[in-house]
Amino acid sequence: MYRSVSRRLGRTATRVYLVLFVVVAAGNAVSFAFHDRLKSDLGAVSRHVAALWSREPAPEPAARLKPRYEAPPQRLTAPPLPPFARFEPQLALEPPYAVTAADAFTAGDVRIRLAFIDGLAAADLCLNVGLTRFPCGLMGRASMQNLVSNAPLTCRPVFYDEGDLRHACTLQGTDIAAHQVAAGFARPDHLGRLHLDRLAEAAAASRRGAWNGNWAVLSEDAMRRDETLLHRLDALKTSHRPTAPDAPADAANDPLGNDAQ
Image (cartoon, rainbow, N blue to C red; front, top):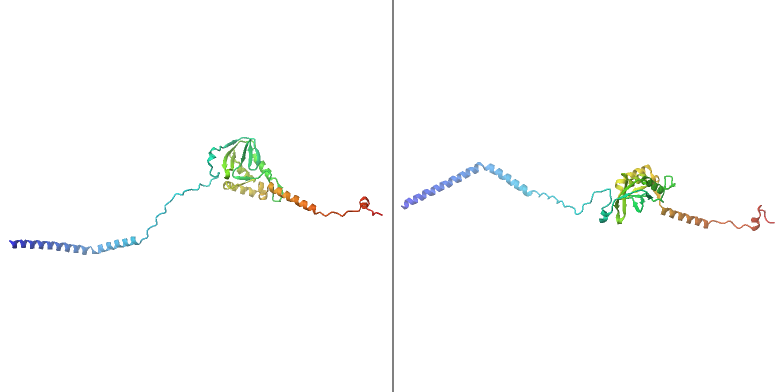
């Protein structure tokens, strides 16, 4: 009985060894058959991993942060309005008007100063190319008076710094400020340069208005200072003028100028 059991165990072990031998042999055969392909695949994988490892990380795109304040686009109008601007109405004016300067007039009790320009005062004098004075201020006032004399105007408020309120006025679609700049009696201010500089350059090239002397304006204060200086110079000349020596009384009474005997 023991012999039969040992024989069976021996046969089973032999079969197990045989199966293991076959499996190992098959594995070696497959490995030998696909050795080159596996080697190339493993090489490609290793190279790819090495390339990924050595590659510098791509910089992350900068986050687009929305600015806390975005500057508004440049406009041809006034700066941002104060809170009370919504309560300032657009004006509809009717003649008659009293023009006080090249950039200002009154309509009844309403005083208007044009926005976007600095005009001549009525008392201003200018020097032309021949250094001759001419009344450019009165000419500028007359230019506006002729334009607005008998027509209704529409004026919208334009707020400057420190509560300075001016108006942009139009006459049947014609911008009065632009008209005065084109005529040579006003120049664009810091808010009007963007859309009025070309008109000013054209007026200067054509020598219109005050540009006849390259805008050599003599203001009333400057003329007053000049007149005061001239008066002082005349007074100095008079005080230092030499006087003639006193003549004898007889000679002064003798019409023929004969010497007294």
